Image 1 (cartoon, rainbow, N blue to C red):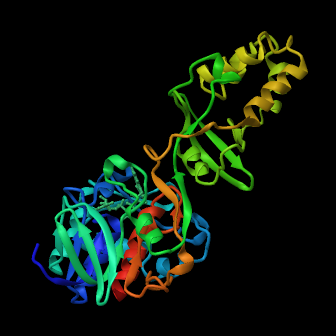
Image 2: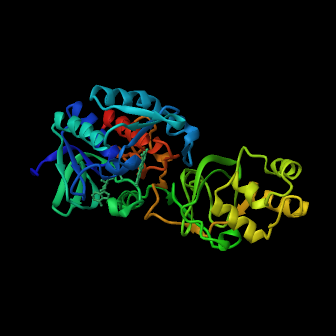
Image 3: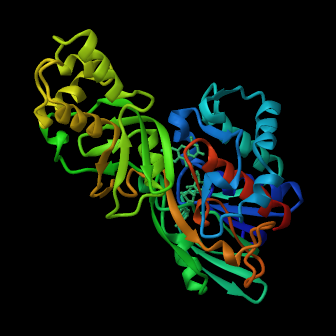
Length: 394
Ligand SMILES: Cc1cc2nc3c(=O)[nH]c(=O)nc-3n(C[C@H](O)[C@H](O)[C@H](O)COP(=O)(O)OP(=O)(O)OC[C@H]3O[C@@H](n4cnc5c(N)ncnc54)[C@H](O)[C@@H]3O)c2cc1C
């Protein structure tokens, strides 16, 4: 790395930092990207199970959590799903649309990293990898960044250091630390899109359900998600649980329908008329997986034939299935959280440029910002959109 004064120093070679670097360098800016990881784009590579859920057709502020919910709109409009898909198409990267407007690469997520790196190479972006950033200070003509390999100087500084989730992929608190150092507000962070820990009480005590999956509807206050739910050794996971985890607050309860779309009460009434000698468990197993059925009937003690079991007992079973109230003990934490909610308060950033209103030349982009997407490609799209926005101005 030459000793020089860079136009732009970008901290973090993740999704946001790489896209921003490509854009800024295309405008002729001399860009340095510093990252402590040996390879850029670690999270992109593992995203979407290796196929990168790169964006979502249904972008809108309702898919994002933030203390200022409208903040993300300008950047998403400027560079949205179509813009990203067009770039992928131009590079010959095939994508497929899945449920809920999610776009995944048909091939490897590595293709997306290669696309971003090609843009950086075209703009002669310099990378300093395997180089931990320790601190940054404002100077008379920009910023000085202290790195393990020594100080670097630049006119503008883009903080794209991501959130706290998945520390084994390089996550650190650097972005938040820098914001606090400069007296900038940070919305308290918490793990989001994360499995929840649930005590083995109630029907969960009756039988190990680890590995059992059902289609469920999970509610927390006014927020509701439907889709696959997975019982784990420690609690609950699966897309619906990850989704609701971003909204759920510790100490609060979730209401879960384990058989949405099924009228279990009606099913039991009909079974009593048509098959009075059938076991309750057999009827329930037509709707739920066998192990879950067994756990429920054992816990509630609802055994016997349809004709023999009292109405009150059947109603208890219906309630347990359709209105299971569960109070998670907590989440699995940053180790397995897909994202970090909270972050640099958007109130101090320009929604058009991502520049800090109180510190010209300083930008925050990507997950370090208090904009958290739902599951489905929304987080990477925020990284692309915010990276693009900053890249036009920095
Ligand atoms: C397993 C997993 C799967 C995911 N799948 C998807 C998906 O399919 N679709 C989707 O939309 N979202 C997905 N996400 C979320 C998405 O990957 C992130 O929201 C997105 O990558 C954030 O981009 P970013 O550039 O802000 O941060 P990051 O991609 O996290 O990049 C931050 C960079 O900063 C570097 N850094 C941090 N601290 C320092 C330091 N002190 N010194 C130097 N460098 C530092 C890191 O090494 C890293 O390279 C997934 C996340 C995980 C963990």
